[in-house]
Each structure stands twice: as structure tokens, then as C-alpha cells.
Length: 193
Image (cartoon, rainbow, N blue to C red; front, side):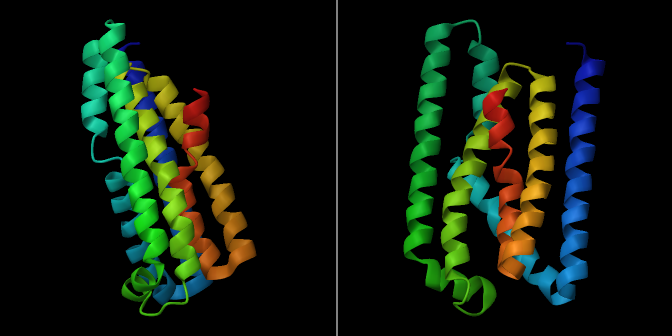
């Protein structure tokens, strides 16, 4: 694929992600006001950090090594096997920590323990974020700009629908869960691509 086409795919996926982010924040602001947006900002940062930690911070390395060894099947299998084991291990460890420490995490993040179940759900959702990021790193390593962009676009659109459903059925806690689902649901089209 030419650099121009790859750049167009990347630009399209970036625009969709920005648009989805603005739409979600606008829905949050209209529904829950400045206080709701403030708490959601803290929660969103937590989700971002969890996505990095759950993947052990290896995604750039995965992209580099897959690109470097894409012709050597044995090395490629070693890279993918080791990286997937690390993602599974770290995301499972984080899930256990968040499941067991839901009360203090809710207290620290929201100032009360009423959102323990939300913290427990996010403990599981972060695993989806980690696997989505891992699959995107593999696609980048194989220089599949179109697959990467289409996964991000489709996942973002699925994520907006999930956000809205969570908001409608779960109120503020549902909206927060929806914020975590937006990046996690990229795993669906990324796994198909």
C-alpha cells in the first residue's frame, strides 16, 4: 500500500475516533452536567492507564518485532506467543486486583464506595482493551493500514452504540461503563480482520 493510501486510512480512522470522543463527551455533558463530566474525566484516565498496563506496555515493541520478523515464521510465532502470554497475564492480574479491591478503588476515584460494581465490570472490560490494542499492534506490524483503520472505525461506531445503550439502561454508572466499552469493543472488528 502506498504511503498516501495509508495516510488516508489513518486520517479517516483518527477523524472517526475524534468524532466519537466528542459525541460521547457531549452526551455526557448534556445528561450529567459539569460535575458528571469531571468525574468521568478521572474515570476515562483510569481506563486509558488500565489499557496500557493490561498490555504490559509492549504494543510498540510488538509492532516493531512483527514488522522485523514477518518473513520468519518461527521468530514471528515466538513474538506473538510471548506477547499474547504477557497480555493475558498482565490483564488477568489487573482484573484480579480490581475485582478484589473494588471498594477502595471506588472510594479513591469517586469519593464513595457506591460504584464498586462498576469497578468490577471495568476489571473485565480492560481485558478487551488490552486484546484490542494487541491485535491493532499486530496489524500495524504487518503494515495493514486499511485493516487497522477499518477496525478502529467499526469499533468506534460499535462503541458509540454500546455507550448509548449503557447510558439509557444504566444512568450515570452505565455511561461510565460505556466510556470503557468504546475502546474495548475495537476487539470485535480487530479479531475479524
